[in-house]
Length: 82
Picture 1 (cartoon, helix red, strand yellow):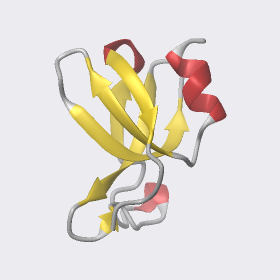
Picture 2 (picture 1 turned 90 degrees about the horizontal axis):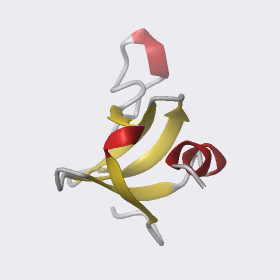
Picture 3 (picture 1 turned 180 degrees about the vertical axis):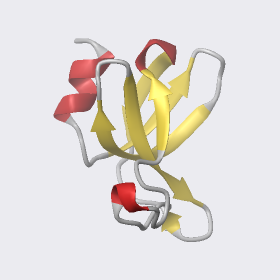
């Protein structure tokens, strides 16, 4: 299964994504397109970061976009970290 299909089936779930260059991202999958997965990152102070309403400038909107080709591994997180 490709990263694209995997991410599409699991929108809304907390994940840990490690890229080929070793960068670790933890957050909730919010959106997926054929080239990127967008996650709402966890914030150490508040739990889940990005408390806004998407496209209109409140909060972080779609969060961080990670290129699907840069992803080395994806793992589900068993619970939220607050």
